Length: 395
Image 1 (cartoon, rainbow, N blue to C red):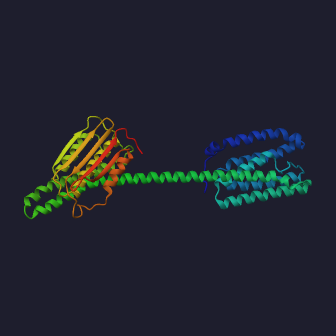
Image 2: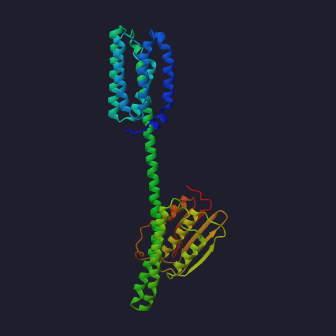
Image 3: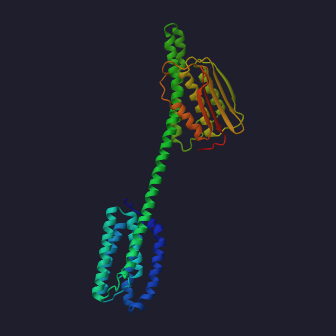
């Protein structure tokens, strides 16, 4: 868990509450020290290292290990100077002043929270050594000894509290990172699924039309070369439309708002799709009623479902003699029905079948909170039914 470099402004924005709190405590301590410890000199010798420790506590968020090592060195140096001059400032549980103790607790907590594990152990070892040095040095100079082992418990409890606080926030940071990582992965997966679905719908719609017409041309070329020749312009047009559709798809992927990119005039696009399918040779009986505007994402899904369903008829229902299409918008729902009377194919469909078309249609409908069904309607025929809410209720 390496801590990235953080600028001064970012440090102050994150650490200003600690800076203010410790500074206020230092001012209060400055007013008390001269009376308790015999003069202004003692107060100055304590206030200077206190200010340095407060600075290290503030910088710990950017440099946790360096702050811990700096605090350890400072404690050892200050203790040596103070006790050499026989200015012993201590409470029952600490050879340093209360504000210095608070600053060290902040440094320990931030170290445990942010530093890598090896750095945590190194920083804690350095601070523990500094604390033991200060306590032993004080005992040698002043002769102070704890009368009862329990007198050392407050100091230990403060250390445990600082470490526990750091561990708590470290665990929260880890959980947050996992949550963010999972959310990003889920969003990326949804984007991949949406892109795969869109690619399948666009490519299958146009390329399958090319394959169907090419197969028809191959079938009749031996008996009627002119009939095969008449199919060539349709193949060329379908190829041109496929390229244009791919360009539109790439264009929508580059735009920030692609929700309405699939269709700007649903009625015209639906009629054009039906006409393109009719040109592939199977008669179509259609009923299109769109008296009211359809929301962008719903319109996109209606068009894609219609395209995929019609292409599936030409791929799978090779014996179909009639396709029935219904696209109707009610007060709250849009209904799409595509049915045929073809028998189940005895061979693989044109272009093969990966089964992704039905999966993509179902995903589209369920994502918008709609209803979807697809299946055989008896001995002959297949029907796709989709009902999508006009309110775009997403699940």
